[in-house]
Length: 203
Image (cartoon, rainbow, N blue to C red):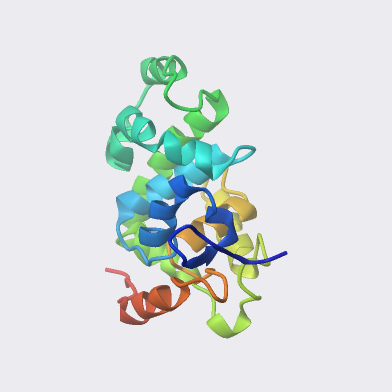
């Protein structure tokens, strides 16, 4: 399967973003390293909502998700109660899956605990960054040893809907790996961004 596609602007991009509405996300977000705890938490939540669906659907609803979940500020979401769950289940702008909604609230509580323990979510997640030499060819894997390890670690702490495939997609998007296809015009840009990125350490 061809890993890149030539888009209307003439550039080669990863094959998965051949739809024009994905260009902005692919070009300016996907794969750039992130150390912001709110963005990291948001992405992990949205990846859990994507399970069984397409990212295209979730991305189209992302603004609605942000409005519904207090911009994914886990300090706020951790305080959600039954009335918030009822409110969210009535919100047609998001994916109304009770289990996933309850998982976000549960995970917000766990995120708050983890941030207090480790100094930040970023400091914890970036411990699982793999050695680039051990990575498979770009766009050829859906899990890795590191995503399995992070998934197990989070589940042990009580997180939900964080399977190894979900975690791998999270790692791809948040720049813990550079999984842009060989030939994609943004692979080198991500490489440079990762080279210039200061890995977060524990407080």
